[in-house]
Amino acid sequence: MEWFSDNIYLVRAMAAALCLAPLCSLLGVFVTARRMSFFSDTVAHSALAGVALGFWLGFSEPTIPMILFSLGVAVAILWLKETTALLTDTIMALLLSGSVAFGLLIRSQLKGFRAQFDAYLFGDIQAVSDEELIAAAVLSVGIGLCVFWKLNSLTLLSAQEDLAHVAGVNVQWLNYFFVGVLTVAVSVSIRLLGVMLVTALIIIPAAAARNVACSLRQQILFALAVGLISGVGGVSLTDRYDIPAGPTIVLTAIGVFAVTLVVARLRSRAGHASGREGRAS
Image 1 (cartoon, helix red, strand yellow):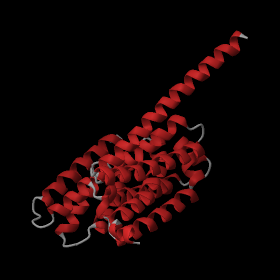
Image 2 (image 1 turned 45 degrees about the vertical axis):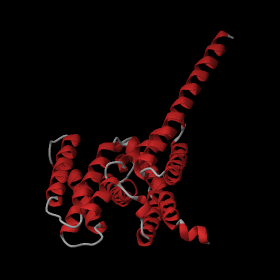
Image 3 (image 1 turned 30 degrees about the vertical axis):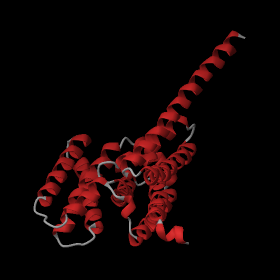
Image 4 (image 1 turned 90 degrees about the vertical axis):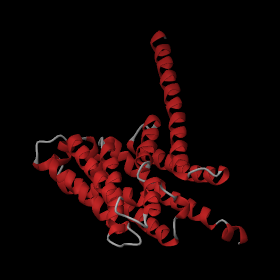
């Protein structure tokens, strides 16, 4: 009990990693399949403007303004994609640069919140409060259930949007649904890694899982495992060596990715070798 009270910050950090790292990894499977990596990066950077706006408006905790502003940017991306001839990457680059510029402009007017602002920019998982931890747990369970509720439709949409439409899937609604849950997950996870690194926790575990998975089900399971290893391992290394949590979590994920890349190469070589032996016989 004494150890628990003396290390409460570590317990909270570990619990936050257990909640958010698998969630980001799960969403990352569909983000990478749909080539939306730049989208999640745009949402993460737009959250910076939401944080600055929240502090400027007098919020002591800017989570709600951050989520609302990010959702507004996400919806704007989809709306501009549907109603203009602009390419998707052009729209996202436009909104990303505009959001960052807006956030930095407001930040220049803040006097007493720059330290808190920087905490969202770079992340501070060891400063997660009990309220933030409860919110993260509730959102993780809620978003996870929503994703598994629409798993078949999301899988079909990721494979081929036109095929999903023919199969009776409401493609427009599902796009907005996925963008909404992704935006909320990214916004909440900013507290874990910060704006600069949160996209990495979405992309890297999914990419690592793709190296070794043979099916979507395997990719989801492997991505969840890599997310857990990255989050828990990163927090453990942070506590042991007194180094920043966000970069450590990301580098742990990259380390796991490197291992899966080696495994995939060895498996490929073994497959080629067995194929040659089969043809020779």
